[in-house]
Image 1 (tube, rainbow, N blue to C red):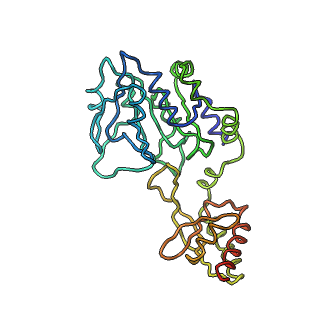
Image 2: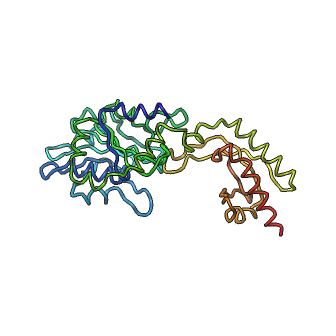
Image 3: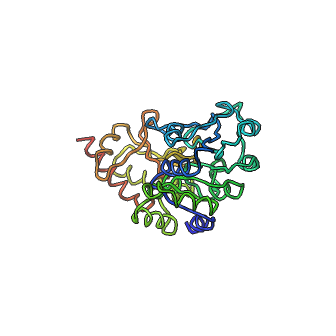
Length: 315
């Protein structure tokens, strides 16, 4: 993670809040005023991220006014330009990191927004700090800042794989304004979160990054070895080609080649209740354990868990 670590701290200003929602609340509060209280945002980016948590409700709770532009599926540069006025505080661009709209669509990239005048705040969501070869459609902080975003907000967990936190990266003066706002103290993180974030960035590769980087051919060979051991114990185990989802609120619709251990569906409950608990997914009457999400160091433990669960299912 050295590259990501350098990418984070090379930017001219950075701040860590308690969550991505906290980062957005701080930005909306500190960068607006009674005279400039409007945030310009595309209607297609007024997202809900789950548990009925809706971005427009969050932003309006700060006292800001939303100036919605465009439509659900198409927003153009002209839409933004027509909405900008003396009350505009900033343009907010939001990446829909847990869904995607396809077909007759249009969105405005950061470089074009940056040329309109007001600062651009880009919520990239999932926490990707630099481009990833397997995720070409997922925005990253380094590219967004290079393209002209004044501020980037991102999650410390999800694709970054660290603790729950909200990262704010961008222009030094802008970040300084956020840091000095009274609300920043209420939304700050503790030393344990900072230590966990540092370990994520500068320490061993976290599980999320390791799973993304897994070589499909190696995963398939691991599945063959696991299945051979299970078959030798008399269990109905097969190797199955699989498509893994990135998940965790990032890269919607992206499928990664993988391999899974295919087991009888009847083992799903015993495995979930075992120690350690093993959770797979059901497809076409079979339980699939996708090894892309399992560390190679845990293959032996997985074999033991399945063998034990198989014994309980037969008893």
